[in-house]
Amino acid sequence: MSTNLKAFIGIATLATASSYSYHRTSTSSNFEAVCTISAAVVGAIAVIRLLKQHDSSSRGGRDKCCGDDASDTISVEGSVMVTLPTWAIASSEDYFSQKYTTDEEMMSLAVHLSDRNITEGTGGPFGAAIFERHPDKGYCTLISIGMNRVVPLGNSTLHGETVAIQLAQRKVGSFTLMLDVDGGDGSEEEGLFWDEAEHSNDKSKATSDQSIPKSTKVVKGKRRFELFTSCEPCCMCLGATLWSGVSRIVCGATKDDAQAIGFDEGPVFEESYKHLEKAGVEVTRNVLREEAAKVLTRYGTSGMIYNR
Image 1: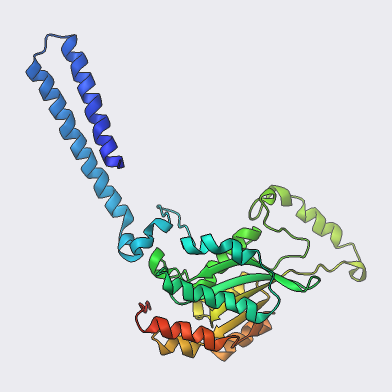
Image 2: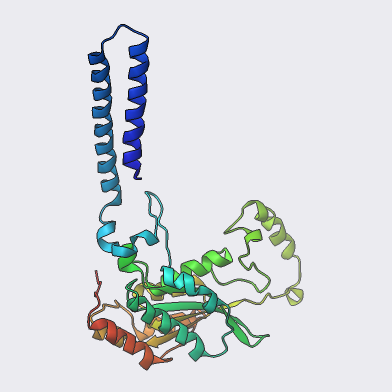
């Protein structure tokens, strides 16, 4: 039963009960009681119309862009929820339970996500995944997955890379993936993001640390998070990669492959990748390029090209 119908029934019932009570305890006529009920019903209808107008204005054009996938997200004023398609959630156990050892295995997942995304009609032809490398164990574990959600969720920033980055940072509980080896692992016990109370003594620690000779200071290692994307990033996602804290980015299809079907990747140049490398981000390209490019070509025959 809809909220509006419940409101109507509730108001009408209340009006009827009130009118009946008034009629039983006064000298009012049946005609007066009927008038009271009628007035209450008319008021209920007016309230419902106002509720519908408010609901329509708050939703805006979301239904138009989301289609059948609109139930995948809840968006209210002041907040935005980023979600994965239901098929991705259903398959997540298979994805996350594996141990990955080669670039090809990890890129294969990113390409699979891009292909499945267009098959299911839940977004564009781009997939991404973030892995954590464990050098001492000889394999990588999956931290997050992402796929293009621009059209279904009505959000131009939800490219495959940015979705994967946001979910990875949410998992580890940090705004950056450049974390110390002994840092958090995103477990429920740790909480999320910066806790000022837990870091109130940082200044005193920093002061005492200055007295330790440089030669005796312990240099902490960093955890290695690597972003695999089925296609070279657009200008937005390249910037997000820089600020995300990943230590490596691995790309499948190229900028030219994406632009060949009509996508505008923006100002991305060879110097852009050199800047990443200067910032400490390793860059590997053309891994499973042919397989990744085929997904783009398939999408280009009938898919929506959603540039600005």
